[in-house]
Image (tube, rainbow, N blue to C red):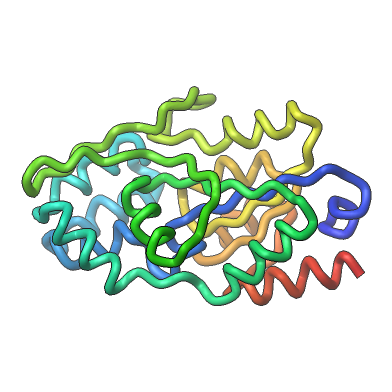
Amino acid sequence: MDPRQLLEQHQVEVFLDFDGTITEVDTLVLLLDRFAPPSWWDIENEVLAGGLNEKESLQREMDCIRVDWETARAFLLQEARLRPGFRELIDWLRQREIPVTVLSGGFRRNIETVFTREGIDLPVCANEAEVTGERWRVIPAPHPRLRDRCNHCKSWHLEQARSRGSKIIYLGDGTTDRCASGVADFVFARDNLLSWCREQGINHLSFTDFHGVLQALRDEEG
């Protein structure tokens, strides 16, 4: 089913990943590249290769970081940037009363730092980080898990939307978006999620920025 049919024929809910999707660069990658040794990429590459799941890898990566929260927050305020067109897309969806939820495999405190700076108010479901001194501990998202592979089961939220009678449009970019993409009715994908959708035969379009997503939805809307 394509976006035209979803928008014209069904109740639709939109779910977006945050890191690397809403933001131009993953906020955790920003922090790790700045405040962890380069060896953290060995962990990430193992995840990409399928040898390590996110539930195990995220804490291992956070164990590499050495930075206090105030320093990290100031760094994110300076470096984290929204992907172009995000505000326009959200405004367009709100005008049509289409529910929008952010689902993140990252940390709520990072998201709120960026959203507060930008004056953005959206529902956010994410993990949290407990920061003690320069040590970071992952607090998994307080939601049920359909599969025991991620700290935050994004698919659970999509299944809840489906139980409300909604069709689902999902936007993402990474490994924590793969499972959710398999649940969605249509996916806008970039980076390694795009390759995954192609390999799995998932109904999708590629995107570079949200201007492209908005144009695709407007075109499908007619």
